[in-house]
Length: 577
Ligand SMILES: *[C@@H]1O[C@H](CO)[C@@H](O)[C@H](O)[C@H]1NC(C)=O
Ligand SMILES: *[C@@H]1O[C@H](CO)[C@@H](O)[C@H](O)[C@H]1NC(C)=O
Ligand SMILES: *[C@@H]1O[C@H](CO)[C@@H](O)[C@H](O)[C@H]1NC(C)=O
Ligand SMILES: *[C@@H]1O[C@H](CO)[C@@H](O)[C@H](O)[C@H]1NC(C)=O
Ligand SMILES: *[C@@H]1O[C@H](CO)[C@@H](O)[C@H](O)[C@H]1NC(C)=O
Ligand SMILES: *[C@@H]1O[C@H](CO)[C@@H](O)[C@H](O)[C@H]1NC(C)=O
Ligand SMILES: *[C@@H]1O[C@H](CO)[C@@H](O)[C@H](O)[C@H]1NC(C)=O
Ligand SMILES: *[C@@H]1O[C@H](CO)[C@@H](O)[C@H](O)[C@H]1NC(C)=O
Ligand SMILES: [Cu+2]
Image (cartoon, rainbow, N blue to C red; front, side, top):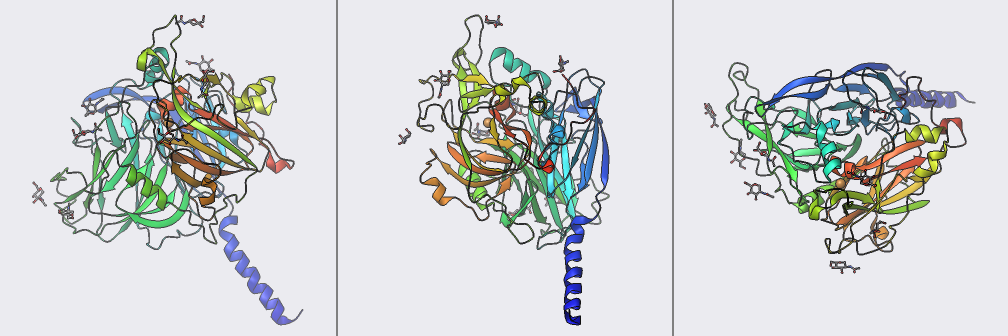
């Protein structure tokens, strides 16, 4: 070999090292302690005891880097069961740490601890964590930030960041809402306020001091890490006189686009860039506002949470903030603005660059078409039901209303217990095809069947799931969340999915990649998944009321031939039932 060739190899070698180094930097183990405990908190003039992590509301922020090993020791200090879910974390082979009660694990009982252990693989951006037991996530939630190994692929430099967590506040005890719903068959009571970082803002009574205010500096660009932790509401969000550039959703980079507002569904996260480019006048505060995107006839709280961006000047430090205007931003969409929601969703595309390729399956080995539906269950003769028409509200996928068993399905699956047959055989098509988005709701039989059947696929299957909304009770935009896998939203539309025509217009180049999809109201969404993560993965509507009613199923991905294609061993402190 000549000298030149040596030199070339050397250069190539150095180049290879340079590009591969950031990924191969030895990973760190980051440890956190989460103590689940009560804390007295006052909002809207009501003081009540809320469930928290470490007494914080919203809970502590987890900050890690891509590639890190994460260990969170959760200790339950309250006389209730609990679990924590790391929403959107892929959990490669570590399904034991995913968290949904009775899907992957038995709950952590009073006085018990469980250490969730997992590794951050090929994910960067904003995710979040929340309790996954009953409705505890109302107050037990927080941000989960993953810093990238490589510089941000954004054209603007990020000079600072602003976490924004939307939530819902109930003056009454949120822990008893689910029990009440199950007892009476009625819908949940609606929340009393929406919140930004736990604060309702000045449009609610007694809340002037509970207002989120963030000082910004003229000329700087901020990364807003926006999380929708509300229980039952999709939200619009806008900042007065500022535009937002979307750069990442659900910890996946997107093609940047600029918008006056965003729509964000419960379970979703969206990172946007905001440049503080307005006249830096200390007497002015810019309103940021969030209110529901409404597609349902069910009761909800018709109100808006606002906070402020305040420009920093020499006077800012000494003067109290002024609330010259609490006028809502002109660019905040109206509550029923489905056109805005649709146009916004149409603009979301994977970055699909050389460094961050879009790994959408071009072909699929299996397709599952499933309705996502609300239902009305006939009232048993010996009971009184308080739902619509004196029946029980319910919800289903392919006419199965999902029942969580009282064991860990993951454990049962891992040990190949006999009960496993209960957890397979989810129908691959609606049992009776009908005009899903055209049925007169009330005259039909809206009953459903109870069950715990899930979709089972071999390791590595390329899977397509088509989610079809129905008009039962009312059509509604449902945010469907899949654990353990990201998916690619290759198609969306209104009306009934057409298996012949609709695939022709799929985006197989740069579809958005997410963990939660807002399925168009009265429409459908087609998702493609590389089922490459062995385990048991919950699939459910991220409107808490719908999960309670059974709008859920699961995906069981079998182990592969190679040891690296199988689940890790169960941890020694794995909670038992
Ligand atoms: C909605 O919020 C307002 C303002 O706090 C409150 O007065 C009202 O009772 C709430 N509505 C419902 C239905 O809870
Ligand atoms: C925002 O811009 C509008 C004009 O589009 C202007 O009337 C208004 O005063 C501005 N608001 C602030 C807080 O600067
Ligand atoms: C805002 O209010 C403060 C205090 O009342 C006042 O000094 C200031 O001029 C007001 N600014 C605007 C733009 O109205
Ligand atoms: C919400 O409240 C506003 C102001 O009171 C009202 O104009 C609007 O019609 C209400 N919207 C719904 C959907 O109830
Ligand atoms: C009604 O009867 C069913 C079937 O016998 C029973 O399982 C259920 O517990 C009863 N419900 C009430 C409220 O008594
Ligand atoms: C479904 O129902 C809608 C609304 O009634 C109607 O417009 C549409 O033509 C129906 N579709 C089919 C395939 O029957
Ligand atoms: C769902 O199942 C129930 C109970 O078996 C049945 O009465 C109903 O017709 C089914 N509905 C649909 C849409 O398949
Ligand atoms: C907690 O969960 C365990 C296991 O499912 C169950 O046996 C126990 O009754 C639950 N405890 C409470 C307080 O709900
Ligand atoms: Cu739903």
